[in-house]
Figure 1 (cartoon, rainbow, N blue to C red):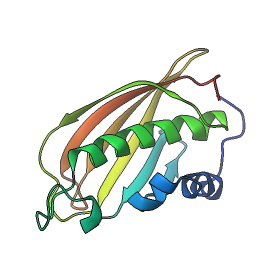
Figure 2 (cartoon, rainbow, N blue to C red):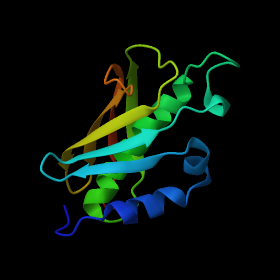
Figure 3 (tube, rainbow, N blue to C red):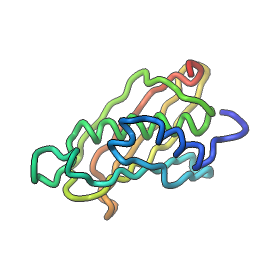
Length: 140
């Protein structure tokens, strides 16, 4: 890990640079350096729901949020963009009419692979999905 982590403003500037992130409306909300946890919020939006009027987030959006949160946790630590090697998503329960809160915990940043675990929660704190991403920290 680098000695100097990126700031919340730096990360949100990077986040805003992606048209996909703009469509999702995601934003880094909190950085917990003591626990190595980055928090991202994805507001509920009818344009990304599973079906018209379902008030349910599409599973692909949840999977994307997991990948983005893990990626940005590693970016926060290494100071530059990193490509995804692999990630997985496990859905726990449907996400109805709620913002999604992703909490990405850095597990390890090695020379060739970085690992982050992500919990996706409702605004009420209910666990909706979990995931793990592997990223290439030196390929940025």
